[in-house]
Image (cartoon, rainbow, N blue to C red):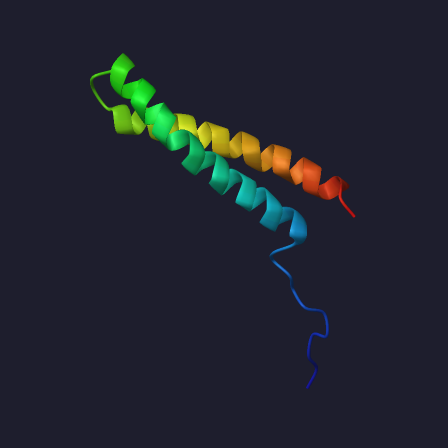
Length: 72
């Protein structure tokens, strides 16, 4: 019977840091995005704010991944 001696790591420091940046970006922009969307659009302000926050989260994940890969 053989076993894998290598652990299969799904979470590296790079992905963990980038996920933290994305989550923080999403929740910090959700409030201001909702306030702006509710003033600009009377229909579906929650959807508009969620889409804007999602875009910020994707950008924050990409930037966080780049920065974390440069760290030792």
